[in-house]
Length: 243
Figure 1 (cartoon, rainbow, N blue to C red):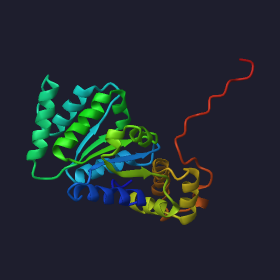
Figure 2: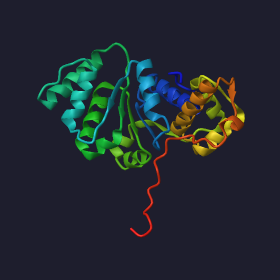
Figure 3: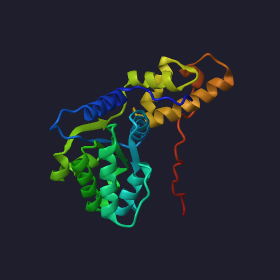
């Protein structure tokens, strides 16, 4: 499989939003949110975008506190964390304001920030002081939770939802990532079986590619694939009779 980013509609929309955040007019708020179900490609596109725009990309964890959050941002900014939260927050704000290049802070797994209101508040304070765009990335329910936080919601001007990809995008993914050609009927079969989830489509393509390379065929078709499994699904453990 090629290590490239397939330019699906979700990806193109996300990059357009990043451009809007970086080039927004004075007075327009600059926070954003990206949400969607597991396997829709959120973390992949964020990692790619962070490299493209020299972003600050951190991944929240369940065990985090406000101290953990500040330490992670400082580390990404090549600083040295200290014991005092106020000192770390002031250092981050000064560093961002001194930076001549506009940057974006990406916070993946942002659902964990709701474990402590302090973490959301300190991010909001950093944004208010520096104007640095902040994008929160989370699961399908995070948008609703943010809407319930009025002080945070009013600062968010970019709401991006990653949904299942359509058949056209499935072709783009196959052409971008797969090192063998995949026939239209097999892509349609994969798209249907994966229920439009790009993560599962990529898994299926990796198995198709392996079969294609091993057999030496130029194009893998549905008739070539037959009834082979497309995914590494978990087994169904059913209770045995009599137990």
